[in-house]
Image (cartoon, rainbow, N blue to C red; front, side, top):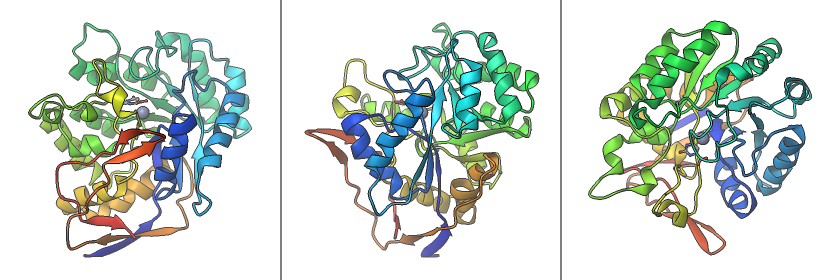
Length: 345
Ligand code: DOR
Ligand code: ZN
């Protein structure tokens, strides 16, 4: 198979940032994807309907004229979020979902939620109106080993939410462990998970390959090989509860190669090439379309895209552009260490 045509994909988890970075990174997503859910962890965060509307305008301004792209906006949940305002923003279709960041779990999450019980009334409202909840699933307690924080979150927080509100539409984002795969598979019908290309491509050895590798540092952190294998198995299986959310997360190189480097992998540019290669390596190309173009739409009760894209296999491995320029600075583009032969035609 040297050419495949599939429904145009969507990316159900992206970071576009703002200002000059936004202008540089939006076209990298809008080129290949029809729709994307945009994360609200700006400084300051996207807290209300007005913030979301203004942010959406700035994103649309950065979409090249040739691209047909729709950003879906999200609100950042805090313990002070007003449930009536949230409801209004959702019913007005200004926002698509709300994001739960446990306070301190990741980049720009300090205004997040410390105690899940304090936002239960908000989650009840979201259940009533059908608004999706997107979750960064890690506990923040520093005494918990960083490699266990997703598992402990599932046991202590996610399970609590799922039992109290079985009908709440939930996406556990960027899952990284076999425990997450199992929990989602066995969980409520309304519970699904997104998976990133970098968690499919790398295990935690990639953080320390001959030296410290800041460009492979992301959160949740890369895990052991057995966890990567569990992610690969489920992502390439066609299981409807699992779909792409790239978590493309641009940071300037100076902020990554730093004594306290930022978490995040910028993978938008070659996302589809990397994923197609991973599926081919697993001999699972027939399931690629489900993972990148169908399962997410179904979870969010949306129609799949009408447009199609073609992926073409080249005779020689692709040479990747290494950096994306932003003014006079750069963002490192994700490139896993295996040959990639597929490109979007
Ligand atoms: O690696 C990450 N980067 N994980 C997140 O949860 C946030 C993201 C970012 O905003 O940079
Ligand atoms: Zn993210």
